[in-house]
Length: 377
Image (cartoon, rainbow, N blue to C red; front, side):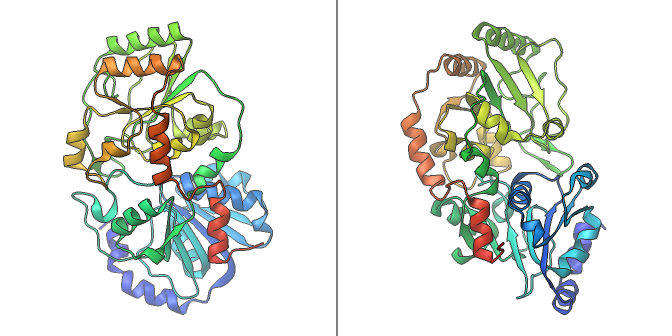
């Protein structure tokens, strides 16, 4: 029996234990069982940069804790995920982006599900082929607009008052000016197959492991064209995507990974700020990228398969895709050339969708969340 199944069987007795254990009013737990990143990491950055750790004890429980513990500031401790449940029983505040405990918080605790992006692809109760127990193990989750508040309500089976209209901590960085713009197009595909998650959505079976690019020859053609434009294409695969074999000898098509970015003290939001345009598909990052008002190209060659196998949170996802729809290799090349030449044509469409999906974002999401739940300096 896996740890997840075991915890579900123990949910009722663990909830009782949680009621009996005294809470530490100054203990904050941040939990992330798929790597210390995304909204959990962004909220942590805000807490430590603003000096909340001078007043609160902050425990970060994550699967990659050894990579972070050496740089932990005063009053901050990094631990593995096995020790998290004991800290959960003691904490007054818990935040998570990935993973949760099937234990209901007490009245003396506040648990916030920060999630990891406003979902276009179906998650939780809406995801096809996934069992959802219908129970809510958090006090609040977050959204970037009333539109996404309704989506999050459906995904997690909660009422409107459980969804905080705060924006996302991970997007706070996008509101900080960065003049280091580069001749760079960023490609952020979502995962198609993940052994780690036990999930497969419209698996790609070609020579490159990329949508629209079937052969090595096409990839080399794209590489040459980028050289002619004086641009680079940086592909950052989803952290949960199974390993993708890169093709050697390319000069202008580059790959990076979550770990490589972390070693440079960066994340994808740093890359987004420095890029000229974005290529993606059904990943939630494009809603974030709308805040920058730059061209977006959507690879949609497998959208029908993806809808059948995974599903979407809306009936017609293409309505929310404010940018070029790319369904072939030629479409991809055309978009890259247009972006390099500064041609757009979708500014008005981006503005309309951005107003719908990002109406509550102003660059201070972390502070809004903390204010609402009563974490103060």
